[in-house]
Length: 402
Image (cartoon, rainbow, N blue to C red; front, side):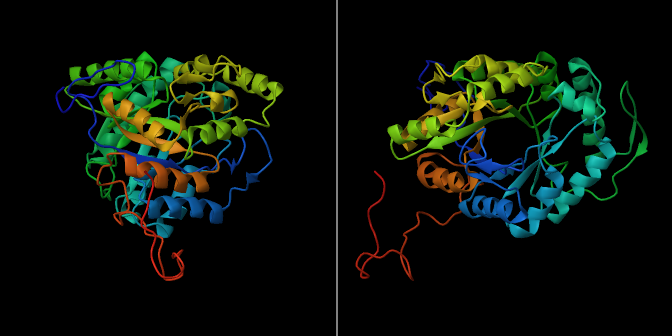
């Protein structure tokens, strides 16, 4: 088998497109956190101190970046990310822009300022889809197709502004006359654009504009099909993209403990909670959300939809609804299968996010081929003095996992 070809467990082989190494990002839960889904038991307040604990942990552990969610249930992603700049040193922040809620000139200035103040640590997440009812509350009344058409115009203007051009543009949804960004970002021509859109029109926008195409955690065969479609669309435009995947993770030292933790995560979720959530999700016009819902079909049976891929999160949580569940070797193996398809960055989360940030890095980082941009560079921690856990106060521990 050629060195750039990897065999996945479901017999998917993509020659020449496998990712040799990967970056790993974590999640900053600005909508709340806790030990259980759909419950106030073990819930945690969204405070600057708590969010800073998670951001500092991700920074210290060597995560490439952090995703901040967006929407009416979240604290504002730009304000929160900005507050984390002086508290961290190297971790990047994947912050959302929402075409339709702001003008591209305004977010270009925001992005350039953030990139300069952070020393080039901004990543931009372009969010088009969502709940039509929420969008209407925000003053966006475009239908699904029109929203992506507006996003296309938005990114045409935004990219040119960030690249230093003077922009004259007259579109169906947006216009600009003599638009100019006076102070450029650190990253040129602009911070990398991340974007997820499962519909045909969404994939067209991705192929035309973005740097990283994102998918939620579907079974490998479905992810492979989606990546192939977007890659072909980009190639027709003379472009190449990177690919990322958004997943939750439940990793423990044994598979039995991991699956017990998955069951515990939805312990307090009632059938009424599931029905209420699924009723709300059914009004979404997001193709990605529809694909998530099709995995669990609103029920608790058959939630392992692919080896170690569990759809239980999506019973009550919108957006990313699947988790990798297993011991470290199993989780790393499943991640490598996605890498075989071309995925070269993983955006992960786990409940609670502070503890799971540490757990994943400690258990799984050593098993992955990481890019130089992920990892703290310290090497394995020896857990030795001063004031560390010495053996009888005379010697450092020498054995590790394995």
